[in-house]
Image (tube, rainbow, N blue to C red; front, side, top):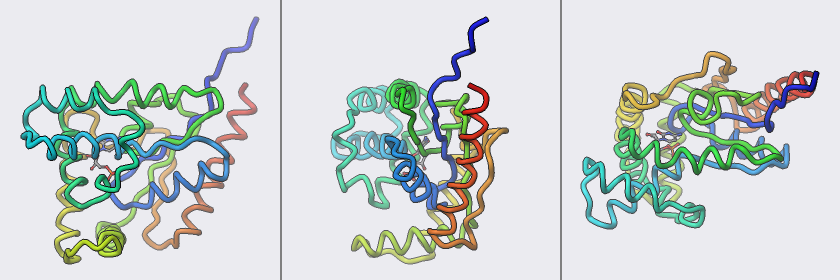
Length: 221
Ligand code: C5P
């Protein structure tokens, strides 16, 4: 009897805005020598392209059409990192038609033989439900707001901490409450609360979780 093919070693990192998931995921990818995809950038790109084209975020056919045009090279645009881009992303991300158009891009990335690391909201639940390593990275809204505020003001944006906290709460509600692929921890994800952790501590904790998952994955091949 042949061995069952287990698929590549995919690390799925989900969690709310500014939870530290991007930092954790990119550090894991560097340590493991694996390609990394920040899937939030795909939704940000759709939102920003719509904004630049003067389109309404509720125009579903237009949003779906923009999603079809997304390629890897648009993801380097610094315009995707702004506060407005985050808000635009969470608006367009509610449309199932947009999510469907971005699914293939993400699943193709996740199917690379060498393995991969992806972060987002629905990686462990929808994009890579069979990923051998899943983390759900979280932190309190206040801690996340402060981190995001530091990032945005560091980029030169003029915004108050209160407004960033309000954005975070609104985004949590929209991302967790939508019908299409809501933000959820997969049943088999390991929870990592980074509220009281430094970047290095969060990255170390994530590394230990993924090393244990990798050992289980190797043993089962
Ligand atoms: O992670 P980031 O804050 O860049 O994501 C921006 C928005 O994109 C999120 O608030 C969410 O609405 C959407 N998103 C999503 N699914 C993903 C990644 C991001 O719905 N896998």
